[in-house]
Image (cartoon, rainbow, N blue to C red; front, side):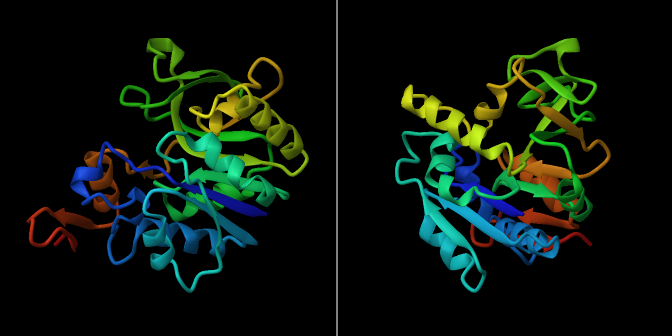
Length: 247
């Protein structure tokens, strides 16, 4: 099994808090987020790890020197979205795959849960986060029915976590559909939109990870939740800006 991480985006919503660095390089307490993720994937016997770079890609490569990583580059990250990042890594996707956004933090047991999932294609959702959900899912009997930021009320079953698992047998269909979307000029879409395009056509499964900790680094409060979970807080003194243990 392989894993592909999307790390090309700038992260404009949190950029001013982290001095313009890539989101996945934030310090989560004696280790960067991206390095933590790489270690967790390797411990779960992921055979190969690929990362799509873009914004400040050299900084990520420098941070991960010494790790066995295959790198890809979306040089058009500022005018495209993550579907283009996935396209640049299309030749890498030739085995059972975990696709994920590099700004997502997962507790250790959650990484194992993702690795052990057998359904495909499957997206991961958290039914404990409905009211504050950013990107929302509505699913029944473990299958995706509706999706989007605009869902409201009873049309929300959970929040999308930022990860999918795709079997080798489904990959040719996934890659062909992605190519078709890009040929139509849909380079502004997310890589997940390829999977969403199958809703109503075939089963897109959902694995509910309710009760397990995860978060992403889109906003400063999300970053602070990750640090608190790990027993740290951040010192925003302009001359310091570092994580410190919570006493």
